[in-house]
Length: 314
Image 1 (tube, rainbow, N blue to C red):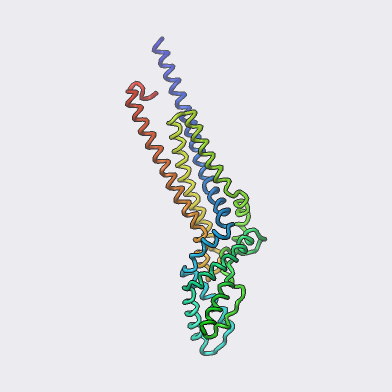
Image 2: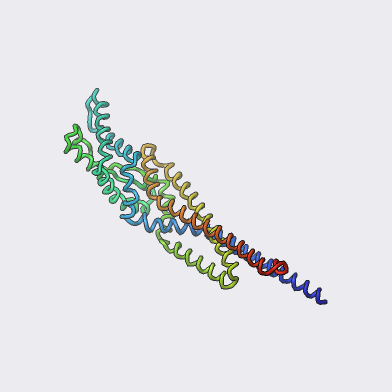
């Protein structure tokens, strides 16, 4: 009878342990899936709030583009094309065009151009945010008029021929086409509305999950929860990177060919902080996952040595 009772007790304990293990696995899987959604959503909403909606951060992000070859080339071509529409010199047309193109290209390497680029983007930021909040059919663009004005002033002061004929008018680089901007507006509205709160809520949730696991299940449960958090971070970082790549590709699909290189440079500059976020979240996730798994294995081995063979499966 004693053996029978002992066997029944062992079977019941094993069944209970199996049930707890199944519940733990299900909760871990749910946590991983939840983080795979929350991590990219939190990162994107914080990015919109902290960078896209903040003029100083926006300008700081795109300021280095004044030295980007694609931006310099696009600006040079636009200014030259606009100027040559006002100049008609017959057989000398191509010669003058080449001269003016080279002169403007040289100017784009100066500090004056960098300052003009910052001014243009500070003005453009209001237009960009308005376009993302605006009505359908409105593209997201950067107006180069302040840059052209600075270029014209400097070239005229240097006595460059025909520089006074460069027209200062609205000249745009398209960053996001009208149709694609329409599909992004609703998303931006939601992200702007959510602000940084999803990121805060995610961190609070993780602290609570690990804390509750520690209180109710001890160190092993805490390590399991930590491993799930790490796996969720890794998966969330991958999802965020995929969303960025898809979004970039789709945004550039509708940009005119002449503006595409410059638009790509602008998009890449504005999303640089998101790429950094991807790597930070990925590294943190890997550290948490690997650290928790290794710690749990070491803990299991230590308990096995202390408990001996009779306690190995308890």
